[in-house]
Length: 390
Picture 1 (spheres, one colour):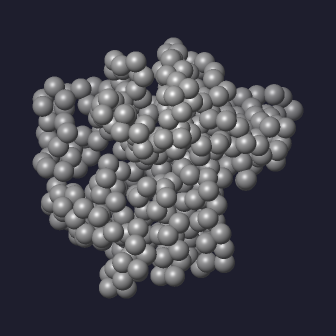
Picture 2 (cartoon, rainbow, N blue to C red; picture 1 turned 180 degrees about the vertical axis):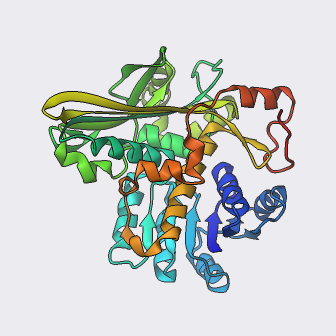
């Protein structure tokens, strides 16, 4: 039994803990500042190898004290990005493997420094983007003799948009604002450069549906460090329905709310609803030379909400939790292979999708599952009871 401590009983932490605990291979501790939230998740899963704790993990001394009395093999942070530097430092001192979901560039740089010379693995930027998208792009890159361009595009969208933003809050509002407001990285002419968020607007068509895509921060992960010097261009953009970028430019740039993010967070959370009826679009395109000919290869996938352990989970929850649990499973199954800083692109796409947790990325899902659960009035109870879906 692998022993893991998951920090944060929020939207993603709840599913991560359930996936691992119900696999039969993990003994899971779930900790949150709100002990009742962690307890609710544990009760929903029937207590199967899942224990709840009230813990403020942003306080390093409290986290160290917990690990001393409840040792684990791996520490998984589902906390806001600004907490992860301190958590990584504690993991280093405790000699436990470390995983997080951060999209923040500066935090990842700090984790890389903390991981230097470590005997255990430090694997930041797990999840969807950064995370799975880097793994998918890296797999395509191996098919080419020479690289020209690498494009990474990801979007978590409502299935049925009906507001001016054409958007629903499907994950962390703080993380969303961070992506929209912070400088972005890209590769231009083989050099790593910094570019502005909410710029580089383009139209993209997938399966006959038109979307827009624009620069956002963090999604490129460490892929530019690993492969950037080998190609002319590499960039990451977020996919949205047409018109969203213009509205966010108004809020963040014209109304200056990028400099008052607390107010922006309150506005979005008061006006933009959450939904479990979403879809995640993953799109990677690599262009280069194969056998002397210029070619392009694409990885395109849509992930829809799924019923897991008797509950409906949104597409972004499934995609993010599947990404990090697959990586955790691969590392803990062969811990001697991983130490120090481990980039997402070090994992093979074939290994991820063949993994028992990565299988949730399998194509072929539809919106009908979430529609049936919603019509039956059994959505929105992830922490309370199981649902039956025909």
